[in-house]
Length: 110
Image (cartoon, rainbow, N blue to C red; front, side, top):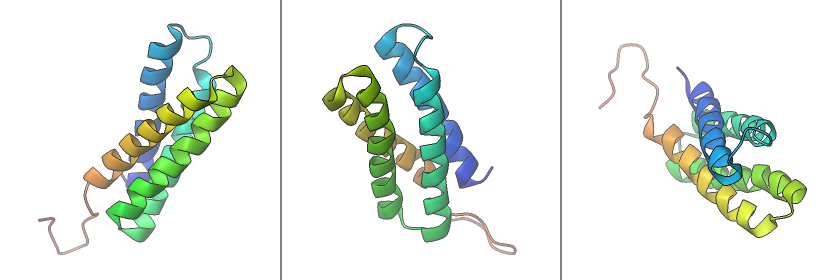
């Protein structure tokens, strides 16, 4: 599975876990899950193209902040949503960068 798919799945799973723990129900889970899946796919794309772990982590934080800013704007708890977004985005970036570099034909990963 490539990094884009890993980022999308990581964003989806983390958003579901965080949303269920914060709201306690399934009523307001769909929007954060979809926003984080898209943000995770974008972080995976950055990881594929750049190969830099620092840039992957930074893009994870920025895209996580942006995704949860939309969630916080709708719920009225902006500062909490920004903190959660930064942590979720950093987690997505770490998961995507931890996956390692893609192998090339004829070479092996260290």
